[in-house]
Length: 369
Ligand code: NAI
Image (cartoon, rainbow, N blue to C red):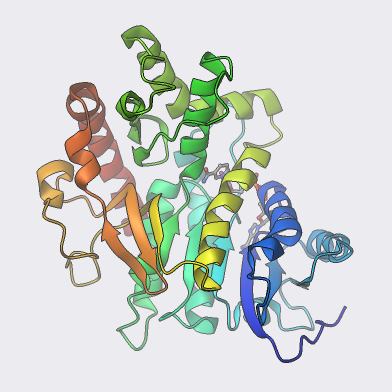
């Protein structure tokens, strides 16, 4: 089907790569049904959803299906070698690229077991993004696992292909770890019997795999509704449940993949903050936790100005999930302050284990570039 011509409008182009998969389809549905409501009423902006997958029949069918939803968002399908230009047409002029392409886990697998297949997919998509997108403006959100290794791999691939050399693309590549925050909040509410209608906000820092995940449950002490909801024994169980929550879904699906619906929900929450930013509803996204590069290609701080030193807490690791402030230009502030608020269990027990594992995960990604 030809792309609909939207005249006299600014186009906000959102690409989903791997859009015919479990996460891709659900996320595209959420974007198609809800993203329009984020536009200001008098806007001259039109949202175009550009959907790509290597599975031709699935992406053509998914896009046709979505196109019958009565929201004023246009959808286009792209696949390798198609007559509408394949991935080049999909990515050109993109403002936001979201990547759930890749294989998911089966029972008994860890996220790291996915590395070889998904690294080659991400490397190839990275080369395409560098070729067809404007690296000095595009924002790239990574969902594919293992996030801990693939974000370093993708950011380095984009830097490698950055011909002009000054795009600062490394400050606009983000690993979506938000499902860990969603799970932390959900599990505490389950424990509390959903007594409060205000969900707790629990930052989750570090990485996105097993013991690299650090749910900052000490933050609950600041919230009157949830201050005493976890005693020490329950806290240990909750930390473990958040770290290995993905396994519950892999086991329940019994060979049919990993989290898709809850991941699409988490992905849409993050994507909608970027839509707010890109259509001008806000100047910055504040206090969003994502897994990012903390230094640029010259090994300078990605957001200079923090009075807390990265090396004081995270051993000069280059990638870490932390609360961020993001503008259209990319990461503006990294909120290292959260490291000062950790309690002794988080700082002395969870953090050292995270740092050790995460270092290995980052090296794996960098070595595959
Ligand atoms: P899926 O297998 O249902 O979908 C993956 C899609 O990617 C398929 O449609 C496939 O055709 C497509 N694909 C494969 N190679 C491609 C390429 N080179 N270009 C474009 N598309 C390509 O898998 P699912 O369940 O959607 O998971 C996707 C990824 O997300 C997995 O790596 C999974 O581990 C990860 N994931 C991440 C989470 C997170 O919290 N960040 C949570 C859950 C899953």
